[in-house]
Amino acid sequence: MGNNVSVQDSIRNKEGPEPWFMSTYLPKNGNLSIVYSAEYDLYTNNKSELAKVAINPHVPKRVINYNITDDKLIESMCKEILLDRLVSLKVIIETLLSCGAQSQSDVTLTDADKVKIMYFWLSLQIARTTPVSISADRYSFAYQINQIRQSRNTCAVLFALMCFYAKIPCVIIKGFVKGGSYYPQEKLKEKYTREWNAVLVDGHWRLVDVLWGSGETVDTRYLLPDPEMLRFTHFTDRVKWQLVVEPTTQLAF
Image: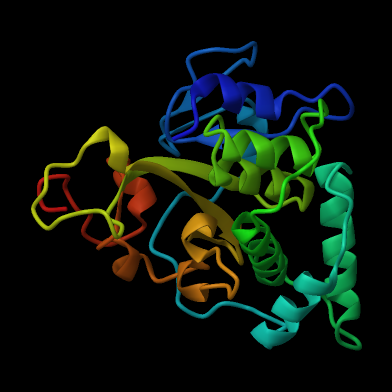
């Protein structure tokens, strides 16, 4: 779990507009003017931007509007795109989406396509273990991935930053997960706390866990999954952000 200081550091921007931050928990430090939205049950540094969304979290429809349906094409493209890790996240996102739009003739990327491309690229990057140059630029990929490797930040925060540059609303959700190290009926402990995301796609909030999707081969089960399936491994006490008809309690989880 990334500490609150790192989250604050990650979303301060000296150049350009301040990235839009939304999370289900309140960062305790930093200079951001964080406010709480009861309507959305989350904290944000831009309530007016949140008001423009005007879509409360709810159970999403299962049909997802993709124009690029070939996952192997996207994975191959993401593996072939060589980017200097010292460049800004903004440039990286612009490059990824431009390459995605050119991957097929006459294709217009939907928001779901954009999320998928970013998910594939970041999942592959997380799996890489090669050293990354040190950067003082908080908005370079090098800085962000080094923060994650030092356990000072989370993949969910980085993915939210990427979504900001892709102009896709993204929430950082904090909760518990049951991974490979969890034993059945074991009491939930701090070591099981994690963060994942919800993105607004096609008028519906949908879940994403880029860390669980990471690997040499990308696991798409954690890309916009059915919340009814994810509820068995991911739990947040912010019931709105479970995105299910009948929310789970921590005791039941």
